[in-house]
Image (cartoon, rainbow, N blue to C red; front, side, top):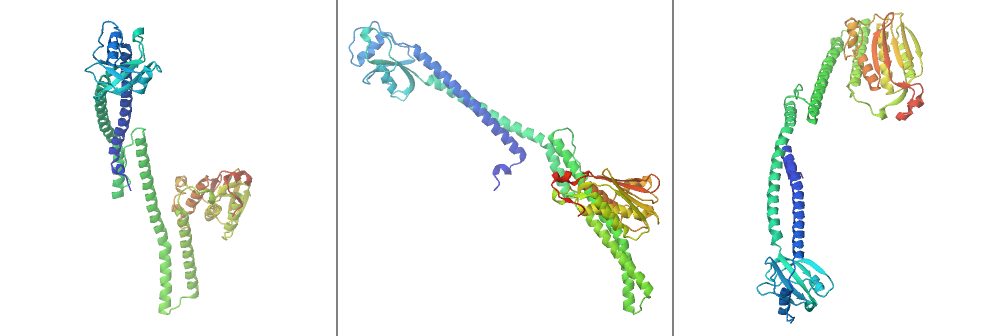
Length: 480
């Protein structure tokens, strides 16, 4: 169950958090100040009590109240009024002047009276309940007044309690003002600090409602909020690009599928009319029609396979899908597959050993696509060469070449040169090559050959020996 605090807005939570933090800090300082002040006042009171001495005459009068007949000790001197003086005998008898209330006796007082301790200092209360601070000593007296007794001099603790009470009220008020001020400042600061977040929230809600990915948020500065806004803008831009590419892919796929489907439907309708009317087509026409249907079905199958390949997520493959692949073996097998196409071409190869980390089947298909592209544009009797040296795989044909203004578009999906639209193909082959090579961490380019034709160059990081790649955790697969 969500706590009530979590149900509050972020602004209020920040304000309350600031208030709590200030309350804790101010309370700690206030308590420490109060304790230090109390200790200092108590020490000052103790020092004052220790400096006060009862005169021998005053002590004699108190002792006489306890039934102790002693010689006259001289003129009696009154103790100042803020203090209360009482005598405690060794048997626990307490003597105090008339008009004063007795103060409770502590064990330490009796210990002083019996000569066990020299002095004692403690808190006590009178018979009327007044709190007192008591200093008990066995003062030096003339021999005629010596004996087993102690003199306690006490003063009311109101001298400490009243200033402490005033200080506590002041600190409590100061803490309250600080907490309220901190909460107000926290809410104000959070409102100003969270304003960009509110803009971000509004933009996200607007995008969710309108599907408009062109919404952007101002990202001024270099702080965390600015970085968040920039990241949000980058995300929406990436989403917009992805959606545009998806829509373009659907539109292009629909366009490419329309031609073979239209032709296929026309052929099938012709077959249906021939069957329902009972008029058989000439054998030669029937063979041409069936061959056309087969060709169109194969074209559709190839186009669907290419679309499935391109629809795979453009993310880095995990290590379990990668293997150490012998690129030279992949190139050799791809060349053998292309030779079976039946074209009257000459194939030459010069393949050095090179091992890369890739998906074996995807890599072989990419090389086959390059060779198919070279075969398609090569004239009858021409030469297609494939060379692998220093980690670079070169596929070269002797075709008419690609105009310079078309080179930037050759790896785009469904792009086909105006001069090649009459040739078979879906316009996806080179796009698949680029995607496969990029997943393997490499690059692919097309450029005019030195004399005639076009040269495709693939470079994938690798090594000459498979053992050097084993730290990646992949097992060598020489072409699996």
